[in-house]
Length: 189
Image (cartoon, rainbow, N blue to C red; front, top):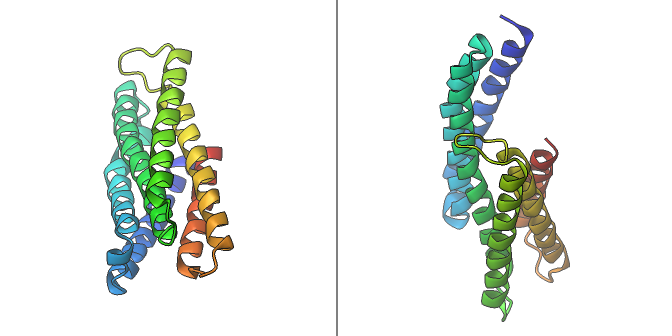
């Protein structure tokens, strides 16, 4: 077995228990009721990791065109699901943080509309830029980078809102900070 395969398997061996621990903490403390989208995101992250791992390992072992296609197909389906969940997660956290705002609905409507418009513009731009062919996922990498960057900006705004709030919600502040690190890491990666 090559070094790449060992590294890949080691990452799955490390990632899955951490994902299970996050889910266990949310279940044990009944925090899934307070933050249902965090729970849904954590479960989806675990499921996509488990579904994707055999395809990734097979591609690393075989390096055939068919293994690459299978892995790409599964990876990008999972990535689309996770991107939708990321944006829903950040929007629900903004909703939670703006409990005391009178213009809460207007703010959230604006955030949702701007997010959808910018995501569509980015998608169309990158699809055109790569001259999308049937079954080709080359547009997805720059598009998901843009979505992660947008989620990081939304998250940074949420963080600023939480820091400036009179009533401090430290748990939400910690969650928001951790998600910001994840989003920026995903955008850079």
